[in-house]
Length: 187
Image 1: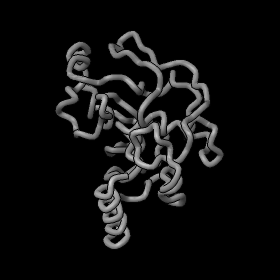
Image 2 (image 1 turned 90 degrees about the horizontal axis):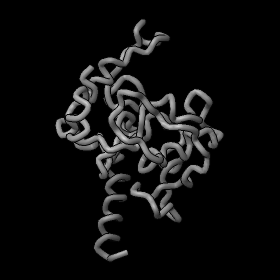
Image 3 (image 1 turned 30 degrees about the horizontal axis):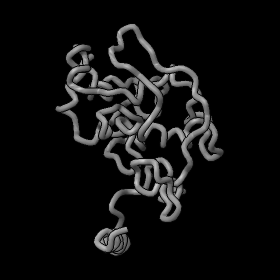
């Protein structure tokens, strides 16, 4: 590591401990703290996430989301979604069954390019250039992190970027996510 990088990293770490956290602790897992996802030594080096702790998932997930109205090409899980699934694929004992995914057929599609061309072709998607800059990854792909923010959120529900309401109000049993979905979908 270059001396300048070491100095900047040390300054950032000191600043975080002196001034408070640079980001809120993971909303869904405050009991685990930073080290459940990040580790200062021996982190996985093949990811774009700083100091990633868990190994990538080895679970084989069945299927991919498909729909006759979907214009995007959904490929293998990659990017941040692969990191999310290193715990949420059912192989991590601390994640309960309600928060695991064994099939991608019933989830929102992930790891596909969401760009102006797709929005134009589809005709019912919001042009992603009008969205917040951190919604898509560096490859313009929709990932788990496009809707879920593990560090901080202004939404009432932990880990969601935007507020949503249940059909029967808070604590209801029917999920009415129309307002949430309209961040990207026109209808």
